[in-house]
Image (cartoon, rainbow, N blue to C red; front, side, top):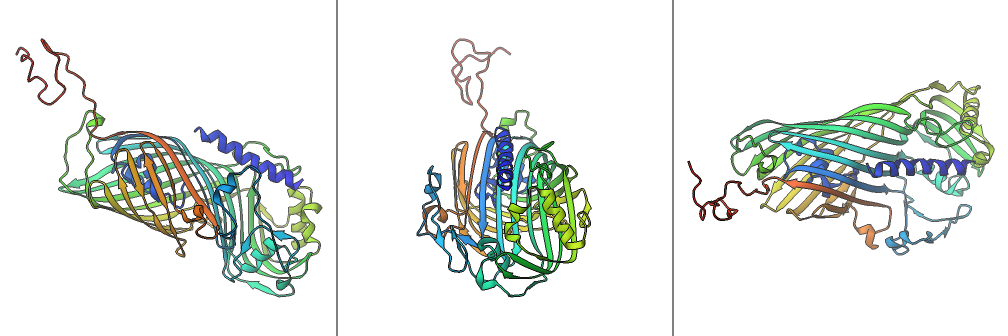
Amino acid sequence: MWKSLIIDLVKISSIILLILLTAPVRSQEMLGLVNGNYAGVNSAIINPSLLLNSRLYLDVNVIAADVFHQNNYLYISKDEYNFFDFFKKDYTIELHPVEHSNGDRPFYTNNNKSDKQFYTNIIVQGPSAMLVNNDHAFAIQTSFYTVNVIKDLPYDMANFFYYDLSYAPQRNILFTHDDEYNFSTLTWSEISFSYAYVLKKYSRNRWTGGITLKKLLGHAGTYFNGYKTDYYVPNGSTVDILDITADVGYALPVNYSTNEGFYGNLIKGYGVGFDLGMTYQKNKKGHSNIKYRKLCNQKFDQYNYRIGFSILDFGMIKFRNNARKYEFHHGSVYWEDIDSIFKTYKNINQLSEDFSTRLCGSPTCTQTADEFSIALPAAVSMQFDYCYTDHWYLNATIVHPVRIAKAYIYRPAVIGLTPRYESGFFDISLPISLYDYRYPRIGLAARIYYFTIGTEKILGFFNLTNFSGLDLYVALKFYLEKGNCKSKLPRFCYERPCIKRKDRYRDSPRPPK
């Protein structure tokens, strides 16, 4: 039953993904895609005011997608895998015997006592478009996101989850945890509208501002915030929870009484969100006040440098459809045979009601509401872009997470330094970043005309480091560049064909006055 539930959830995610696939992801943070002057509509991901500071006046994103995962607990040894083996039909990860647990395991573990972090997202950004008209820029975007986060999980819990309760080195030890740890997942779609405007310009200085407003459609959401947690494990099938305080919420496209998937409306909640951004740009030359009638006549103002600031993904989704919220305050339970939990309980309702009865005496005493909200992965960001020449640039970007609600999706911090070469037909960039302020990474991204492919963790593709995560993003778009009008031949040519150049009447008689 539980296996079929998991399969149903995978099917739900896959179908939603396929529906929107014809319709970029925030790949921590797609530094090779969002910061260039050919980024177009994708630049709104990091700062909506960047829509105006572009070489493009029209940009149509057909599809951009990203798969990202990173953790500091499980890994595959660099000597035991080849990335391209993952695409083989019958490939299986090699299993390893574990000394203190039952059965073999596919991954090695980092056996230090630091808190464990897991972050996974799959994002598709589909039909989207940007238009720049003199001092105004407009964009509309469609997106799909699914994010899974485990934050600050104590090492002993990670070991029990992975090795199960038979992990002998941790038996009969009292573990006490007073610091918060979180599990959260969120799957949602966005329809967003962006607007940017030149706030002020004089001499070589220009300030632009931008805003993105988002309509959020929540497909599924879960969270667990653990606070006070004291427990010990006496044997391989029992947990004695001495003290637990936690909040739990879930809203899934599942019938909780039968575990039937695709239950009801696939939209379980609604919300709104927004991004705000501002950019200061120091141009190489003074600005022009010309209002171009033809969009293609607009010019790109080359700059010495620009500095941007933005707040990203401030918003939340409120789940009211098929939603449950529970709270435990200093509960305790001695739970035997917990290792057979998936065999004992036939559906989600039965599990939640029994857990509530064990903690406080009745099936519903821990349920506090039939609705809850989850905040988006909010952050603040700064960007600095320096121009060496017309084609060579150096970008620095900082993204710092911000928590705006009790239940939220954590967004790991990123500090990135990205040198890049860009031209009309070819871009290449080398993002060097520090993930979560702790883990250095090096990436590579390239664009050939309308197609971009990139990663911010390239070493994992070539067996140069242990495999603890991956990052891969692609984008396909079409665009029109500023200052690239195709002149039409004038209609008043007389004896000879007109010559398509500035002095096009040189070899023709002058038209009559």
